[in-house]
Length: 328
Image (cartoon, helix red, strand yellow):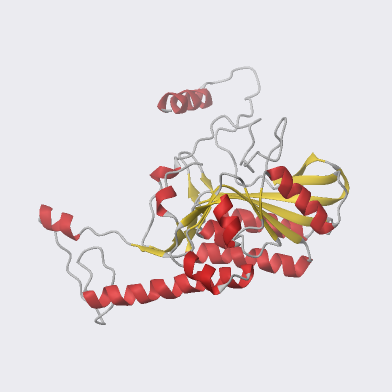
């Protein structure tokens, strides 16, 4: 990777005497607008496919040489564009995510539900390799949820993650002194052990947010009390188990999700399927997951840090932690 960067920088420094300097974009631009590209079909009425991948966050995604908008910003941008097009009759969300922060997940849930209400468009969700916790939460407004045969989903609950460095600080002889205006002002501080009373408070907050998640699932999926009790353990399920529990409506492949979308909206068999991207791809199809900043044609370098290098900050998450380094 270092050699690639050095080579790229050398290219930028080479003097070009007696000729026009070539226009080489070293770093992809975030300014490239979303544009519509047709994947298949014809006619005016459209099925829009939106891919949601990775940890759901409203923080920008840091790369090695660039920063991309957050998952929330990117999805909302596509929904806003779709809302301006009255020919978009159905949106298919392809979800491949272990979840994310409670607030970011809830924002997307609300945005999808509000989009449906404002436009009258149908929503179909295709759960891909992983759609756990917040990845399932954002699927709840859908008219139809399909799981791929190998999908892992569920994890219907919340986790409160916070780092602790008190033991390390004690080991190396470092301490932090704190003046506070209230007895609970430094609750959750990484610099000291958590008291029993503080643990109780954090557990109440965690349980309340978890209960909100479970209640939304029960309401949207119209689950029986015994099923609600089962999913409250926050375990994960394979596709066939999720179908049995009523968490999904169908197990199948992406083509089945497209067919279901056509039926829900009353579209023809050859209805147009479109995506919003920032560049054109040769031989593009519905399995392409990228909107791509800058585009492959003009971009010399386009690298991002692996997801496993990103850290989770203190906070409440609708997240399956075991999948943080998973790229299913």
